[in-house]
Image (tube, rainbow, N blue to C red; front, side):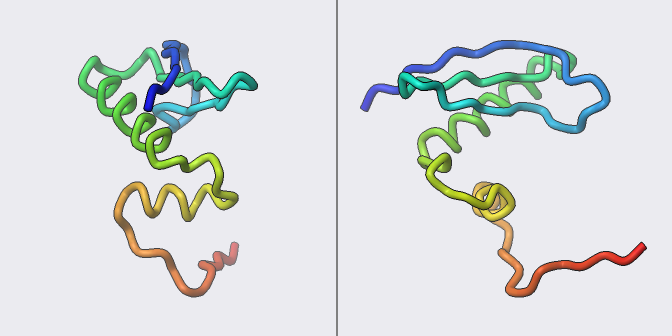
Length: 84
C-alpha cells in the first residue's frame, strides 16, 4: 500500500491544535503541522497524523470518537454536558 502525502509547516496562532490532515481530491493527503512546535513535537504530530491516515479515519463521521480511539481513551456512553 502506497500512501501519497505532503507535509506543510505553518503557524497555528492562538490555537491548541498541533496538526491537522486534509484528504485531497486525488486521494493524497496534506499534513499541516504547527511550525512553532519543537522538532520532537513536530515528529510526534506527524506520527499522530500518519496514524489517522493509516487507520482510514477519514471515513468516520465523529471526530471526537476518532480522536478517542486514536489516543486509546474510553468512549463515553452518554454525552458530557456542561452548564455555564
